[in-house]
Structures are given as C-alpha cells and as structure tokens.
Length: 282
Length: 319
Image (cartoon, rainbow over all chains, first blue to last red):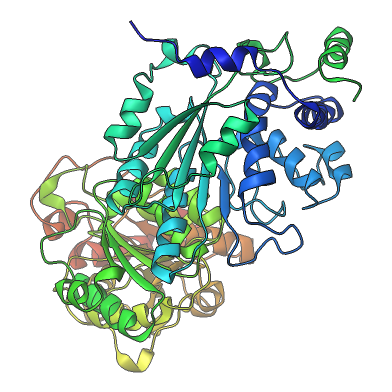
C-alpha cells in the first residue's frame, strides 16, 4: 500500500496568496485570449516557478544572456503559461505579449522556444529532453569553473520517458551538485492518474537510488519551497531532486485534479465566471 | 577512416579547448591518448544516446564543440528526436561521428546497418551531412568541422578503404569535387562509393564510354552549382550510394535537377540498395556486390541505361 505523502495532502488544502492569484489571472488571461492552452499543467507549476524566479535564480531581465546567470529549463514545456506569466511579470518582455499567446506572430507559442522568448534557455515541448540538457549546462559550469546553477522543471508524466533516467544516471555519475531537478508531482497526466498510466512510486526512492539527494515539499507552499531551495545542494557532491507535491489545476476548483483541464480549446462563459470567482477578475 | 577521424578529434582538442569527445560505450581504448592528455574532455557516458545528445546540446550551449561518437544506427534511429530538437532546432555545433555508415557492419545484421541514415539526417533543417571517401579525406574534413555553424552528421566508412582522394582537391564542406570530367555520363557518388565509381569509370572507358565523377562528399548542403555545371552536355546522370533509394544522394540530386532545370533533364539512373532491410550478412563488399553496387555491376547498369536513353525520351530510371 502506497502511503500518501503529507505534502500531497497539504497541497490540496494550501491557500494561495495574492501574488499566486495574480499569476493565475495572467495565465488564464492568456488562455482566454488564445482560446486554448494547457491550463492544469500551468496552474500546478506556478508556485514552483514563482519561488524560483522571485527568490532563487540569479538572473537579470535586462541581461538575459549574462554568462553568470543561473539556468532554468522548463522541461515540461506544456506548462509554459506559468513561465510566460513569470517572465512577463519580471520584465523579460512586456505583459501585453501574454495576450498574443499562440497567435501567428506572437513570440509565445504553445511550447517555449529558445531565441523567441527572452529568458527561455531551451526549446522544450517534446518531453524527456530538459534534464539531459541541464546535465550538459551543469557539467559545462564545472568545466569552466563557473558558479551558476542549473534548475530543470520536470512533469510527473514526463518522467515516464526513459531518457530522464539516462540523464539522472549521468548527473549522478558526474556528481553534479550544481544541478536541481524539480518534479511537478501533480499525479495526473493527460489521460488520467499517473498511478494508472505508469505508476511512479516509490518516486523519492527512485531518485535516491539514481544517486540524487531528495527533498519532498508541498509545491504550493511558497515558504516551504523557499526553505528547500535555499539549501541547494541538499548534499554536497550529489545532484538534488525536489519532489514538489502539487495539484493539477490548483486554484480553480473545477479544474483541480481534473484531467479534462489538462488542455483546453475553449473556455465557456460559465467556466469564465467560475474563474473570476476563484482568482478574481482578469 | 575511423581511426583517422578519432585521432583528429584528439588533434583538434589539443589545438582548441572547446573540443570534447563524447562516446557512449565505444571499443576499449578508443582515444586512449586523448583520455590521458585531456581526461576532462574525454567523456564516456554510457549506452544512453538520447541523453548524450541532450547533454551535448547543453555543453554546446555553453560554448563547447562536442564530437559525439558511436555506431551510426544508434546515433540516428535511437535518438532522432534529440537530434532534431536539441541539436537542429537550436542549431548547435555538435558533431555526430557515426561509425559504420552503410553496410560496414554487414555481419551484425540489420540493427547495425545504417542504410537510411543519410535520408533521415538530411531531412532535418540546419543539419549538415558529410560522407568522406577515405582516411585522407576524413582528416581534411575534420579540420573543417571545428568552426562550422550548426550540427554535422559524419558518416564514416569501415577503415582501410583505398585512398583515392587527393590533397590538391582540398576539402570544403558543401563543395563537391569533380574527380573526372564527364563525357556522355556523369556519376555522382558519396562516401566509399567513390572507389567503385572510379573502377566503374575505368571499365566504361575500356568500352569507349567516358564517365565523369562528381564526388559529393557533402550531401547536405548539396553543391547544386557544381552539379549543374557538371551535367552540362551529359546524357546520363548516375548516382551511386550505399543507402536505400529514398531520401539519400539520388533523391537529393534528382530534387536539385528538377528544381533547377525543370525540363530538358538528362536521363537519370539511381543506383542504390533496395528499399528493404538486409537479411544477409557476409561483408560490406559482398552485400554491395549482391545489390548491384560492385564496379562491374555499376558499369553494366550505366551501359544499359545509356543505351536506353539513346532510344527513348529523357526519363528517370531507378533500380
């Protein structure tokens, strides 16, 4: 019998502060403008990305290619709405770009592209690529004797991909303690529960056995996320995996833990009304 | 050819600190001298090609020039999405050194025979595809890879292939080499088909047929200008490749001719492997012979096609 993590239970009941609600309004505004978007996967990510970009990453929106910047890769590229909201809010590009999401001349596609979106380190969307790229970035930092750190955000469905585990072995082999894998463990992939599609448990033990120092956290608890991320590397000489227990669709009651909200092609009037009730006017 | 290419990686590494060697699980002792001289830049990363390509992309993003090396089928089929997305979409300077292009691994069967690699690599935007013909040319080619923008797929032959390239021809990526001026026939070859083209040209010459040879070591970008120059006045263009008929050199040449000439095309004969997996073993030579790619068979096919072209309107022929 698999034990339900207390972090997972806490994620379900965790309340959201005004900044978290604001970022959700940005995400949902993009969805409304485009008439489409991966809603659930973005909403589960928001606090992970928020804490990373607000409190952890050494980055400068005015100098997004600074060689000493920390690197972050959204390996679950379909969660890009959360990243776009944060990057726009932090000034990497104007907030008005969010309204153009997925339109033909927008810089913001349904998956993030390097070279198109300031602040995006790698084009992702095909799953299972980001951790390997992150290993390369982290190894390069080691070889160049640079102090930047590399963070890779992975989806739980994404880690079905065997390439993720190849990368995990590679990261451990090189003892990359400047590399952090953050797993958005919302327990729901496109078709349904991860436990049904391809069971991941015991997930923490898996990462541990692959040579990572593992932390588990309520992925919607901003303070807890800060606390964990401030102590990177968790163990010297080892890459870190942070299993962030989250809720898919977090913040929208009708979308929470609901696979139908993985991707939306349109929002009905009643859904828009419900969003206003949940996160405020947007 | 393989040893030469490997030794060139070491030589380039000595000259330029950006150069890395990344092998999956190569033969024992591969680049041992480099591993001793530059241990941090000689990386053996395990049988994990998808990961290795992504990792190489990350290293290239930070200014390194990784030379990734394993067997051709594993560098192409196994990790195609990583090659497409991580390398080509980002247009990164990673070099894929593919051991055993074509039928080099004939005895090991279809899992190890890279017979569609040119097609699938050529299909990718930003990818460059090079098939050197011998060790000397491989050395000249490797010199040119250091500062080439974007990814390169390098299809290596077996090693021990007869040296037919000439230093005076030099080597420039994307520039074909006219080895012999054409008469009625122009053969366009790539990789180790050049040796067979030369032998076939000698056989044809003995029959009074003058056949030129354009060595298209770079299949992408194709040297269309050299091709159009060489086919002037030619009655038959024959392409020679150790590859399935779809998407390889023959396709590239046909596409270029159709795109640039539109009408008035010379007759064309595409000599290639058949569109099927090989279920025979033996040797590279024996399989090439079995599929009509020995010098004798090439000469005979060209004679027949030339005769047919003289009695019919221009058309495309294929084996």
